[in-house]
Image (cartoon, rainbow, N blue to C red; front, side):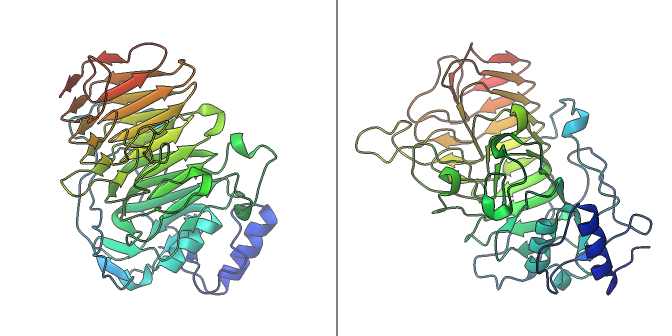
Length: 402
Protein backbone atom coordinates (compact mmCIF):
# COMPACT_ATOMS: atom_id res chain seq x y z
CA UNK A 1 0.00 0.00 0.00
CA UNK A 2 1.43 3.35 -1.03
CA UNK A 3 1.95 5.84 1.80
CA UNK A 4 2.32 9.58 1.64
CA UNK A 5 4.17 11.61 4.16
CA UNK A 6 3.67 14.86 6.07
CA UNK A 7 6.40 15.40 8.66
CA UNK A 8 8.18 12.47 7.05
CA UNK A 9 9.08 14.85 4.19
CA UNK A 10 11.50 16.65 6.51
CA UNK A 11 12.92 13.36 7.78
CA UNK A 12 13.39 12.13 4.21
CA UNK A 13 15.12 15.35 3.25
CA UNK A 14 17.59 15.06 6.13
CA UNK A 15 18.27 11.41 5.36
CA UNK A 16 18.91 12.08 1.68
CA UNK A 17 21.20 14.99 2.47
CA UNK A 18 23.15 12.88 4.95
CA UNK A 19 23.67 10.18 2.34
CA UNK A 20 24.70 12.67 -0.30
CA UNK A 21 22.14 11.26 -2.75
CA UNK A 22 19.14 12.77 -4.49
CA UNK A 23 18.89 15.75 -2.12
CA UNK A 24 15.91 18.07 -2.19
CA UNK A 25 15.93 21.49 -3.82
CA UNK A 26 17.05 24.28 -1.50
CA UNK A 27 13.49 25.54 -1.04
CA UNK A 28 10.89 23.03 -2.21
CA UNK A 29 8.06 24.69 -0.26
CA UNK A 30 4.77 22.86 -0.70
CA UNK A 31 5.52 21.76 -4.24
CA UNK A 32 7.65 18.67 -3.70
CA UNK A 33 5.78 15.42 -4.34
CA UNK A 34 5.60 12.65 -1.79
CA UNK A 35 8.75 10.62 -1.13
CA UNK A 36 8.25 6.86 -1.17
CA UNK A 37 9.90 4.10 0.80
CA UNK A 38 10.56 0.89 -1.09
CA UNK A 39 8.75 -1.27 1.40
CA UNK A 40 5.37 0.35 0.82
CA UNK A 41 5.49 1.56 -2.77
CA UNK A 42 2.68 0.42 -5.03
CA UNK A 43 3.78 2.20 -8.21
CA UNK A 44 3.52 0.28 -11.44
CA UNK A 45 6.57 -1.55 -12.73
CA UNK A 46 8.03 -0.57 -16.10
CA UNK A 47 8.48 -3.81 -17.96
CA UNK A 48 11.27 -2.63 -20.23
CA UNK A 49 9.34 -3.57 -23.32
CA UNK A 50 8.61 -0.59 -25.60
CA UNK A 51 5.22 0.07 -27.10
CA UNK A 52 3.20 -1.54 -24.32
CA UNK A 53 -0.38 -0.81 -23.38
CA UNK A 54 -1.49 2.48 -21.84
CA UNK A 55 -2.40 5.86 -23.25
CA UNK A 56 -0.32 8.99 -23.62
CA UNK A 57 -2.21 12.23 -23.13
CA UNK A 58 -2.69 14.77 -25.88
CA UNK A 59 -1.58 18.39 -25.61
CA UNK A 60 -4.06 21.10 -24.63
CA UNK A 61 -4.79 24.03 -26.90
CA UNK A 62 -2.70 27.19 -26.59
CA UNK A 63 -5.54 28.79 -24.65
CA UNK A 64 -5.20 26.31 -21.79
CA UNK A 65 -5.19 27.85 -18.34
CA UNK A 66 -2.14 25.83 -17.41
CA UNK A 67 -3.81 23.18 -15.26
CA UNK A 68 -3.97 19.43 -15.67
CA UNK A 69 -6.38 18.37 -18.40
CA UNK A 70 -7.79 15.08 -19.62
CA UNK A 71 -5.74 13.50 -22.38
CA UNK A 72 -6.02 10.99 -25.20
CA UNK A 73 -4.52 7.52 -25.70
CA UNK A 74 -1.74 6.76 -28.19
CA UNK A 75 0.42 3.82 -29.20
CA UNK A 76 4.09 4.66 -29.65
CA UNK A 77 6.81 3.30 -31.88
CA UNK A 78 6.82 1.11 -34.98
CA UNK A 79 4.61 -1.98 -34.57
CA UNK A 80 6.49 -3.57 -37.47
CA UNK A 81 9.88 -2.96 -35.92
CA UNK A 82 11.56 -6.06 -34.57
CA UNK A 83 15.05 -4.90 -33.65
CA UNK A 84 16.42 -6.46 -30.48
CA UNK A 85 16.65 -4.00 -27.59
CA UNK A 86 19.81 -4.37 -25.47
CA UNK A 87 19.48 -4.29 -21.71
CA UNK A 88 20.92 -0.80 -21.31
CA UNK A 89 18.39 0.57 -23.81
CA UNK A 90 15.34 -0.86 -22.04
CA UNK A 91 13.07 1.04 -19.69
CA UNK A 92 14.19 1.51 -16.11
CA UNK A 93 12.37 -0.41 -13.37
CA UNK A 94 10.30 2.23 -11.56
CA UNK A 95 8.49 -0.08 -9.12
CA UNK A 96 10.25 1.70 -6.24
CA UNK A 97 10.02 5.41 -7.09
CA UNK A 98 11.75 8.17 -5.18
CA UNK A 99 8.96 10.66 -5.82
CA UNK A 100 5.32 10.37 -6.84
CA UNK A 101 3.85 13.44 -8.50
CA UNK A 102 0.16 13.67 -7.67
CA UNK A 103 -2.35 12.58 -5.06
CA UNK A 104 -4.58 10.33 -7.12
CA UNK A 105 -6.42 13.14 -8.86
CA UNK A 106 -5.64 15.16 -12.02
CA UNK A 107 -5.60 18.39 -9.99
CA UNK A 108 -2.82 17.02 -7.79
CA UNK A 109 -0.44 16.62 -10.73
CA UNK A 110 0.94 20.15 -10.92
CA UNK A 111 3.78 21.75 -12.82
CA UNK A 112 5.35 22.87 -9.54
CA UNK A 113 5.51 19.34 -8.16
CA UNK A 114 6.97 17.96 -11.37
CA UNK A 115 9.66 20.66 -11.62
CA UNK A 116 10.61 20.17 -7.96
CA UNK A 117 10.86 16.40 -8.39
CA UNK A 118 13.20 16.75 -11.38
CA UNK A 119 15.42 19.11 -9.39
CA UNK A 120 15.49 16.65 -6.48
CA UNK A 121 16.45 13.73 -8.73
CA UNK A 122 15.79 10.02 -8.55
CA UNK A 123 12.92 7.95 -9.97
CA UNK A 124 9.77 9.98 -10.64
CA UNK A 125 6.33 8.49 -11.30
CA UNK A 126 2.84 9.99 -11.37
CA UNK A 127 -0.48 9.36 -9.62
CA UNK A 128 -3.00 11.52 -11.49
CA UNK A 129 -5.99 9.20 -11.46
CA UNK A 130 -7.06 6.48 -13.89
CA UNK A 131 -7.30 8.58 -17.06
CA UNK A 132 -4.61 10.08 -19.31
CA UNK A 133 -3.72 13.65 -18.34
CA UNK A 134 -1.74 16.60 -19.69
CA UNK A 135 0.38 18.67 -17.32
CA UNK A 136 1.23 22.13 -18.63
CA UNK A 137 4.78 22.84 -17.44
CA UNK A 138 4.91 26.50 -16.39
CA UNK A 139 8.71 26.60 -16.20
CA UNK A 140 11.42 24.40 -17.70
CA UNK A 141 12.22 21.43 -15.46
CA UNK A 142 15.99 21.36 -14.84
CA UNK A 143 18.12 18.41 -13.80
CA UNK A 144 20.63 19.17 -11.03
CA UNK A 145 24.08 17.82 -11.85
CA UNK A 146 24.51 16.32 -8.39
CA UNK A 147 21.80 13.74 -9.20
CA UNK A 148 23.25 10.36 -10.22
CA UNK A 149 20.13 9.68 -12.26
CA UNK A 150 16.73 11.09 -13.10
CA UNK A 151 14.03 8.76 -14.45
CA UNK A 152 10.68 10.24 -15.52
CA UNK A 153 8.02 7.59 -16.10
CA UNK A 154 4.56 8.73 -17.17
CA UNK A 155 3.05 5.28 -16.84
CA UNK A 156 1.61 5.57 -20.34
CA UNK A 157 -0.85 8.24 -19.16
CA UNK A 158 1.06 11.51 -18.80
CA UNK A 159 1.79 14.23 -21.33
CA UNK A 160 4.04 17.17 -20.46
CA UNK A 161 3.24 20.30 -22.45
CA UNK A 162 5.40 23.39 -22.95
CA UNK A 163 2.25 25.27 -23.97
CA UNK A 164 4.05 26.45 -27.13
CA UNK A 165 6.01 28.87 -24.93
CA UNK A 166 8.96 27.08 -23.36
CA UNK A 167 11.30 24.10 -23.39
CA UNK A 168 10.04 21.29 -21.16
CA UNK A 169 13.18 19.54 -19.85
CA UNK A 170 16.84 20.58 -19.55
CA UNK A 171 20.06 18.84 -18.50
CA UNK A 172 23.48 20.47 -18.88
CA UNK A 173 26.52 19.26 -16.96
CA UNK A 174 28.43 22.39 -17.98
CA UNK A 175 25.81 24.80 -16.64
CA UNK A 176 27.15 26.21 -13.36
CA UNK A 177 23.63 27.20 -12.36
CA UNK A 178 22.86 23.46 -12.10
CA UNK A 179 25.98 22.91 -9.93
CA UNK A 180 29.16 21.58 -11.47
CA UNK A 181 29.79 18.15 -10.01
CA UNK A 182 33.12 17.35 -11.68
CA UNK A 183 36.11 19.19 -13.15
CA UNK A 184 35.43 17.66 -16.57
CA UNK A 185 31.83 18.62 -17.30
CA UNK A 186 32.17 17.86 -21.00
CA UNK A 187 32.69 14.16 -20.35
CA UNK A 188 31.07 12.91 -17.17
CA UNK A 189 28.98 9.83 -16.56
CA UNK A 190 26.13 11.42 -14.63
CA UNK A 191 23.38 12.50 -14.46
CA UNK A 192 21.78 9.65 -16.37
CA UNK A 193 18.44 10.94 -17.65
CA UNK A 194 15.69 8.59 -18.85
CA UNK A 195 12.24 9.53 -20.11
CA UNK A 196 9.82 6.66 -20.63
CA UNK A 197 6.13 5.92 -21.15
CA UNK A 198 5.41 9.62 -21.57
CA UNK A 199 4.69 12.32 -24.16
CA UNK A 200 6.18 15.78 -24.74
CA UNK A 201 4.08 18.26 -26.66
CA UNK A 202 4.29 21.90 -27.68
CA UNK A 203 7.79 22.47 -26.33
CA UNK A 204 9.42 25.60 -27.76
CA UNK A 205 13.07 26.61 -27.41
CA UNK A 206 12.87 29.45 -29.95
CA UNK A 207 15.16 32.30 -28.92
CA UNK A 208 17.04 30.28 -26.28
CA UNK A 209 20.69 30.37 -27.40
CA UNK A 210 22.15 28.33 -24.52
CA UNK A 211 24.86 26.05 -25.95
CA UNK A 212 23.79 27.13 -29.44
CA UNK A 213 20.06 26.59 -28.88
CA UNK A 214 17.70 23.86 -30.02
CA UNK A 215 15.92 21.12 -28.14
CA UNK A 216 12.32 22.30 -28.18
CA UNK A 217 11.12 19.59 -25.81
CA UNK A 218 14.40 18.30 -24.31
CA UNK A 219 17.95 19.68 -24.27
CA UNK A 220 20.78 17.48 -22.97
CA UNK A 221 24.49 18.14 -22.65
CA UNK A 222 26.69 15.67 -20.82
CA UNK A 223 25.91 12.58 -18.77
CA UNK A 224 23.68 10.02 -20.49
CA UNK A 225 20.22 10.14 -22.04
CA UNK A 226 17.65 7.71 -23.41
CA UNK A 227 13.98 7.79 -24.39
CA UNK A 228 11.79 4.66 -24.29
CA UNK A 229 8.14 4.45 -25.38
CA UNK A 230 7.91 8.23 -25.67
CA UNK A 231 5.96 10.50 -28.01
CA UNK A 232 6.97 13.95 -29.26
CA UNK A 233 4.31 16.17 -30.84
CA UNK A 234 4.38 19.72 -32.23
CA UNK A 235 7.68 20.75 -30.67
CA UNK A 236 9.82 23.48 -32.23
CA UNK A 237 13.01 25.51 -32.02
CA UNK A 238 14.52 28.39 -34.00
CA UNK A 239 13.39 28.69 -37.62
CA UNK A 240 16.82 29.74 -38.92
CA UNK A 241 20.48 29.07 -38.18
CA UNK A 242 23.14 26.86 -39.79
CA UNK A 243 23.60 24.45 -36.86
CA UNK A 244 20.71 24.95 -34.43
CA UNK A 245 18.34 21.99 -34.37
CA UNK A 246 16.27 19.36 -32.65
CA UNK A 247 12.64 20.40 -32.46
CA UNK A 248 12.09 17.48 -30.08
CA UNK A 249 15.55 16.60 -28.72
CA UNK A 250 19.01 18.21 -28.91
CA UNK A 251 21.96 16.28 -27.42
CA UNK A 252 25.61 17.25 -26.98
CA UNK A 253 28.67 15.68 -25.30
CA UNK A 254 27.56 12.25 -24.12
CA UNK A 255 29.85 10.40 -21.71
CA UNK A 256 32.69 8.66 -23.57
CA UNK A 257 30.64 9.11 -26.77
CA UNK A 258 28.30 6.33 -25.66
CA UNK A 259 25.12 6.35 -27.73
CA UNK A 260 21.81 7.98 -27.05
CA UNK A 261 19.09 5.30 -27.25
CA UNK A 262 15.70 6.09 -28.77
CA UNK A 263 13.45 3.04 -28.38
CA UNK A 264 9.84 2.39 -29.35
CA UNK A 265 9.13 6.10 -29.69
CA UNK A 266 7.21 8.34 -32.08
CA UNK A 267 8.13 11.79 -33.38
CA UNK A 268 5.16 13.42 -35.07
CA UNK A 269 3.07 10.48 -36.20
CA UNK A 270 0.40 12.34 -38.17
CA UNK A 271 0.01 15.38 -40.37
CA UNK A 272 0.36 18.57 -38.33
CA UNK A 273 1.86 16.73 -35.37
CA UNK A 274 5.55 16.84 -36.36
CA UNK A 275 8.36 19.00 -35.05
CA UNK A 276 9.66 22.11 -36.80
CA UNK A 277 13.12 23.67 -36.56
CA UNK A 278 15.85 25.15 -38.71
CA UNK A 279 17.54 21.73 -38.75
CA UNK A 280 16.50 18.37 -37.32
CA UNK A 281 12.72 18.38 -37.15
CA UNK A 282 12.97 15.63 -34.51
CA UNK A 283 16.56 14.97 -33.38
CA UNK A 284 19.75 17.03 -33.56
CA UNK A 285 23.24 16.55 -32.20
CA UNK A 286 26.90 17.51 -32.42
CA UNK A 287 29.50 14.81 -31.77
CA UNK A 288 26.91 12.34 -30.46
CA UNK A 289 26.16 8.74 -31.47
CA UNK A 290 22.59 7.45 -31.77
CA UNK A 291 20.91 4.05 -31.70
CA UNK A 292 17.29 4.35 -32.85
CA UNK A 293 15.21 1.19 -32.45
CA UNK A 294 11.62 0.36 -33.46
CA UNK A 295 10.61 4.02 -33.71
CA UNK A 296 8.61 6.28 -36.04
CA UNK A 297 9.54 9.69 -37.47
CA UNK A 298 6.92 11.34 -39.63
CA UNK A 299 5.77 14.81 -40.66
CA UNK A 300 8.79 16.60 -39.20
CA UNK A 301 10.41 19.53 -41.03
CA UNK A 302 13.75 21.35 -41.30
CA UNK A 303 12.66 24.81 -42.44
CA UNK A 304 15.86 26.89 -42.42
CA UNK A 305 17.45 28.07 -45.67
CA UNK A 306 21.07 28.26 -46.71
CA UNK A 307 22.53 25.01 -45.30
CA UNK A 308 25.73 24.86 -43.22
CA UNK A 309 27.92 26.84 -43.58
CA UNK A 310 25.25 29.34 -44.53
CA UNK A 311 25.27 30.48 -48.12
CA UNK A 312 25.79 34.17 -48.70
CA UNK A 313 22.65 36.16 -48.06
CA UNK A 314 20.96 33.44 -46.01
CA UNK A 315 20.61 32.71 -42.31
CA UNK A 316 21.52 29.04 -42.87
CA UNK A 317 19.86 25.77 -41.95
CA UNK A 318 17.22 23.60 -43.57
CA UNK A 319 18.82 20.15 -43.24
CA UNK A 320 17.71 16.90 -41.64
CA UNK A 321 13.93 16.77 -41.88
CA UNK A 322 13.86 14.16 -39.12
CA UNK A 323 17.47 13.74 -37.91
CA UNK A 324 20.44 16.13 -38.05
CA UNK A 325 23.90 14.91 -37.00
CA UNK A 326 27.20 16.81 -37.15
CA UNK A 327 30.63 16.29 -35.61
CA UNK A 328 33.67 14.06 -36.17
CA UNK A 329 33.83 10.46 -34.94
CA UNK A 330 30.26 9.34 -34.23
CA UNK A 331 27.82 6.66 -35.39
CA UNK A 332 24.13 6.41 -36.20
CA UNK A 333 22.23 3.11 -36.23
CA UNK A 334 18.61 2.90 -37.37
CA UNK A 335 16.94 -0.48 -36.78
CA UNK A 336 13.29 -1.48 -37.04
CA UNK A 337 12.44 2.14 -37.69
CA UNK A 338 10.01 3.92 -40.03
CA UNK A 339 10.96 7.37 -41.36
CA UNK A 340 8.40 8.86 -43.75
CA UNK A 341 6.80 12.14 -44.83
CA UNK A 342 9.57 14.32 -43.39
CA UNK A 343 11.06 17.15 -45.43
CA UNK A 344 14.08 19.43 -45.58
CA UNK A 345 14.49 22.72 -47.41
CA UNK A 346 18.15 21.81 -48.01
CA UNK A 347 19.77 18.39 -47.48
CA UNK A 348 18.48 15.13 -46.09
CA UNK A 349 14.70 15.03 -45.92
CA UNK A 350 15.07 12.06 -43.57
CA UNK A 351 18.66 12.21 -42.26
CA UNK A 352 21.51 14.70 -42.53
CA UNK A 353 24.84 13.12 -41.46
CA UNK A 354 28.16 14.97 -41.72
CA UNK A 355 31.32 13.59 -40.11
CA UNK A 356 33.75 16.45 -40.62
CA UNK A 357 36.86 14.25 -40.37
CA UNK A 358 35.15 11.49 -42.39
CA UNK A 359 35.39 8.84 -39.65
CA UNK A 360 31.68 8.53 -38.82
CA UNK A 361 29.53 5.59 -39.91
CA UNK A 362 25.84 4.88 -40.35
CA UNK A 363 23.83 1.65 -40.57
CA UNK A 364 20.20 1.03 -41.53
CA UNK A 365 18.70 -2.34 -40.57
CA UNK A 366 15.16 -3.65 -40.99
CA UNK A 367 13.89 -0.13 -41.58
CA UNK A 368 11.81 1.80 -44.09
CA UNK A 369 12.62 5.31 -45.32
CA UNK A 370 10.15 6.72 -47.84
CA UNK A 371 8.69 9.99 -49.07
CA UNK A 372 11.27 12.22 -47.36
CA UNK A 373 11.95 14.97 -49.91
CA UNK A 374 15.23 16.90 -49.87
CA UNK A 375 14.55 20.17 -51.66
CA UNK A 376 18.24 20.99 -51.97
CA UNK A 377 20.56 17.97 -52.08
CA UNK A 378 21.00 14.35 -51.03
CA UNK A 379 23.44 11.49 -51.60
CA UNK A 380 22.98 9.49 -54.80
CA UNK A 381 21.48 6.08 -54.14
CA UNK A 382 20.19 7.02 -50.69
CA UNK A 383 16.82 8.77 -51.05
CA UNK A 384 16.16 11.21 -48.23
CA UNK A 385 19.73 11.03 -46.89
CA UNK A 386 22.70 13.35 -47.17
CA UNK A 387 25.79 11.54 -45.92
CA UNK A 388 29.48 12.39 -45.55
CA UNK A 389 31.44 9.83 -43.56
CA UNK A 390 33.99 7.04 -43.60
CA UNK A 391 32.07 4.94 -46.15
CA UNK A 392 28.56 4.76 -47.60
CA UNK A 393 25.82 3.82 -45.11
CA UNK A 394 25.37 0.09 -44.54
CA UNK A 395 21.85 -0.98 -45.53
CA UNK A 396 20.35 -4.40 -44.75
CA UNK A 397 16.77 -5.73 -44.94
CA UNK A 398 15.58 -2.18 -45.49
CA UNK A 399 13.67 -0.14 -48.06
CA UNK A 400 14.75 3.36 -49.14
CA UNK A 401 12.51 5.08 -51.67
CA UNK A 402 11.59 8.57 -52.74
